[in-house]
Image (cartoon, rainbow, N blue to C red; front, side, top):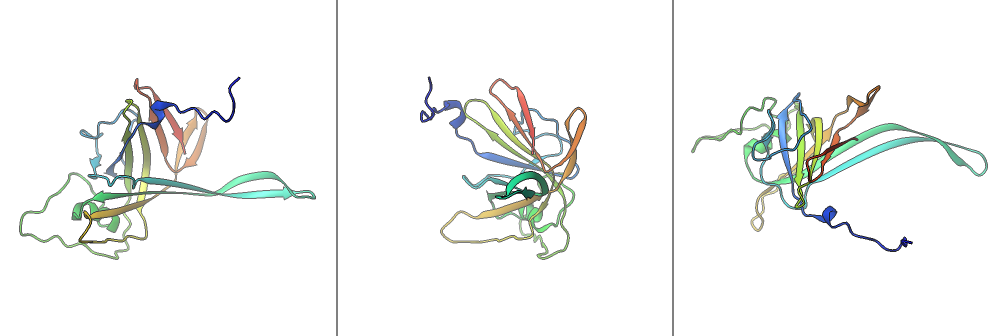
Length: 210
């Protein structure tokens, strides 16, 4: 009989991966399938090189609890609030990536460059908070792929830009996920923040709403 203290490692689950992020103007449809980051799905553009170990997706759910009896015992729980934050850093100082955090851009059609000698002015502190669609794509050595799909995100209220002489320039990107109604079963719709799609090595798709 297997012992509980035998912590077996499944080798294919510890393969290395770096998550890439693709952005699109909201709304942008996405059909769950294997993503080639070199040729992104229609409407999405690659945000660029991601700083290793920086991608983080944090989900929080607030709950109301009803306790009764002596001593009090939890008898009922219901989710009363939800939030999700997507955070990562890019190796860049470009205005093109900065525009998304500043909320200055609502139409995304191409990665735009600036001609030599020209100036691109951006406004810090605008009240505009544009909406985007965001995909996080991680490829693992064993051939599996993990996709975090956020149908609607907005830039976080806080943004810090640091330029340091002893580090490669990195730009912090933080987005807040917005809720959307989606079918979680054939007869049930729920308000969710995003979806997590897992494709195993042979291409099978497994989706989890979250």
